[in-house]
Image (cartoon, rainbow, N blue to C red):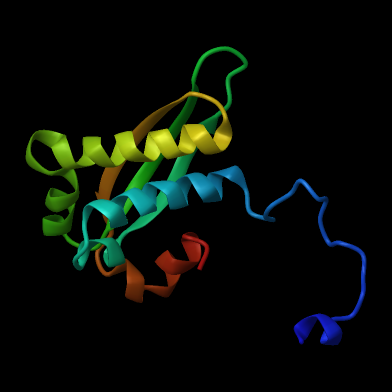
Length: 130
């Protein structure tokens, strides 16, 4: 039914382009996805991921650094886990997905940072692209 209502027009993008979003956007979403898969309660909904560095190297691994932003210190402790085990698992899972998506090996470095009440702060939301 929708096909009959939609006007005919040329494609807006080339056939091999799946999205108008950048690789940085997808990398941040893969990291965030890893957080969601590991933690099912409140913590994932209070997280944001910001890519701070994305260096493509001709030879060797690409370097990606990202901040996992949370609202409270106790959330930071949960994301890091005992002796960094939870953060390591997040990074390992995300890196595998990122490498598959980019088709290139990457060195992924994650940091967990607290930005108090960022979801209710217009300036912080704006700096994150919301």
